[in-house]
Image (cartoon, rainbow, N blue to C red; front, top):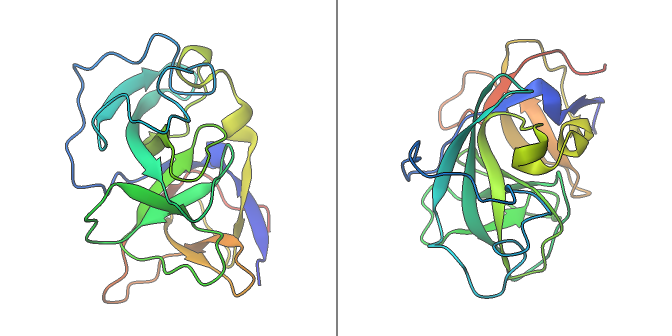
Length: 192
């Protein structure tokens, strides 16, 4: 059962995807968000899946990492929905964490930057602070999205991904146990 929520603006994702990011790749002309109709929500990928771009976000004051992935064939998603894939991805498809019964391992988190149809391709935020610059993601809408927590998240504390029996996506405080993977660090405590 979720105890509280935390705004995406208050988390920093750890990029756990195994592909290297590219500081030389320029952000798309229309950014990574909904204004980018060339790359986003496309059945046929316009870029190689797994492509990463690292860009400075002047509002968030940090380097954010973006990755081009395919949404799973099971479900589509909307802006701010936390998605994940397995520890040993053989594809670059992600599932929404909030699917009932979804298994979440490995801490490979990707947050949707817009509405995505099942089996379509899109840019996702996968590392660094939550992007908030207009030229990257169209403003602060993503940073205002909240996600549930099932334990008290502390400022500066690591977290992992989970979901509850009802399929609610959760961030849970990372305890030092074998096999758990850090998905990121919180910049503030949750709203408990």
